[in-house]
Amino acid sequence: MDFRSSDTVVGPRSADLLPASATTAVKVVIVGGFGVGKTTLVGSVSEIRPLTTEETMTQAGAGVDDIAGVERKTSTTVAMDFGRISLSDELVLYVFGTPGQERFWFLWNGLFEGALGAVVLVDTRRLEVSFDVIGRLEDRGVPFVVALNTFPESPAYPTEELRTALDLPPEVPIVACDARTRESGRDVLMTLMRYLYRLSAPPAG
Amino acid sequence: MSAPGQEWDENSPERLYVITRGRSGLAEQTTFDLVTLIVSRSEPEPSMQPEHAAILRLCGAPLSVAEISAYLRLPISVVTVLLADLLAEERIEARSAVPQAILPDRALIEAVMHGLQKL
Ligand SMILES: Nc1nc2c(ncn2[C@@H]2O[C@H](COP(=O)(O)OP(=O)(O)OP(=O)(O)O)[C@@H](O)[C@H]2O)c(=O)[nH]1
Ligand SMILES: [Mg+2]
Image (cartoon, rainbow over all chains, first blue to last red; front, side, top):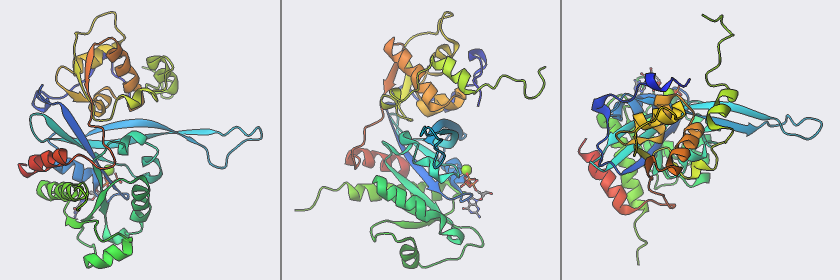
């Protein structure tokens, strides 16, 4: 990324401008292992060509304390793909797709903070990459649904077998999807919203 | 043409430090979410820092902090520092993202579902 002098900054195409009435924006985060289809999902649901934002993360270096006891800091740039869906004249949904380096997602506080929830995209050929991210979402209290991205060679497991393998509580929805199609991506987001709606129900009695 | 390796690294820490005048952006991040919508309230002026002017030009229509970062090719923490300057001078309006408690508001979720149904 480099800053372009202000005269040469290319902004949104006029077809991509939000109406002046847009007042509220919400966000959802798509997480999952390397190459599982996050960018594809963002692109298929987005009304704009997906964009990339970045943040510079500073992390205290692990195990590299020098003699003086001063922790060395390492700095990493984390890039994030995102897309946008206008839901009404006032309400806009942004969908963020995390990049491959899982350990940095959760350092980016502003990413999950304020998010409605998350989608864990899973490739059934590589279930193990999802364990860490599911654990971290649970630790943070971020509500999530699991979407199984269907690749041609992906083994199909019964949902309950996957639930056991991923150690998911019974209420967490698991749905199959094809990240390449808009309808399927939309259905995944809808599944998340229905789940959030159920979670937000006032306690009975 | 400069030789490879001699180019000014556009996103070097030093350059970002100059743009933000050394501010980290940590304080500003509590004011601006990635999806806070920004709208310009004034025209850019020639005397302004170019990055400030660029933001005012971009935000004729509402634009999220993340989109501003993408179009300007600057990290979020740098953009939020610039936005805080503009907000302090009342040159922009910030339409804040809905602060989420642990669980989001039911009416908001309903509105999102309604919008998704129409896609
Ligand atoms: N068959 C099939 N292929 C898919 C699907 N989703 C994504 N792909 C393909 O899988 C590859 C990786 O998809 P990406 O969307 O780039 O994955 P990603 O999770 O963003 O990858 P990283 O950002 O590198 O972690 C691409 O070649 C996609 O075309 C799907 O639902 N079905
Ligand atoms: Mg990707």
